[in-house]
Amino acid sequence: MTAAIFRVVLARGYVPRQLFSSTSGPIAAPASIIIHTAETSDVVSGSYFPRCGYDFIENLSSSLSSSASLPVVPAPSTGREDWAARWQDQFALKCNEKKYGDIEREELFTTGKSNSRTLQWRMLQIPAGMVLPPHTHVALEFYTMLSGTLREVRMLGPPLSRDFPLDQEPEPPDMSKMRWVEGAAPFAFNRLRPGDTNVNELGSIHQTFTTTSDSAVLLVLGCGHIVPIPDKRLPVTSLFEVPTVESRERW
Image 1 (cartoon, rainbow, N blue to C red):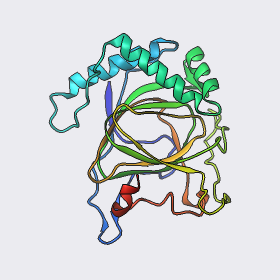
Image 2: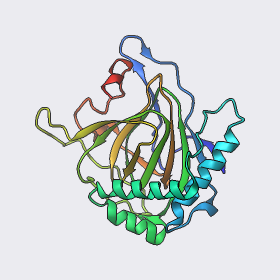
Image 3: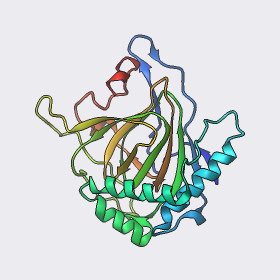
Image 4: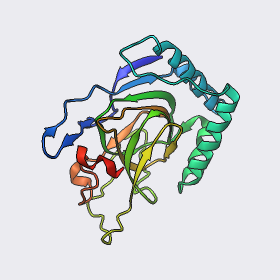
């Protein structure tokens, strides 16, 4: 198991941003996002996926409990088989809500990969006041909220692009020409709390952030590779602007 400061593969200058106040400017720079990654040997296919997730979070919770400098990672509140069964049920439910979710889930449980990419268990500890700018996903990702609160702006509907070959540098989707009727923007504003789950299918687009009073700890099964969407490719809307402290209650 390893811990690393937040990095994004092929990020093209993509970095977490910080919340700011419309009256007083930037808030003090937040601490770095910390990612704990399971050993490669823990990556398997089939029904053993959730059991590995349980073992990962239980071991991580125990190893971090003595560190005063890191956020507390809650240990699983149920037994291994019950936790794995619930995880699998939630995973299937969330995949079923996406246009291609069931297809991607079948690929994962058959091959152990998504869009030819190997998935791993990761724990993300996101400090308060952190913004992850708009990005898309090159493979399936499923995450569970363990503590804190995470907010997001998510594009609804099918992905704009699912073409992210493993042997090519991913091309971010172009949203700049998107138009919609007043009051009918295809975006959802979500607030995720402990116990909530979500799936990012291949090509999904969203922006996530924490407020200055809330951090977040997530258990993630994913490839760890996201593609930032540069400002020139974003739609003409304020929805993806870095949220101000004053606007955080919208979520």
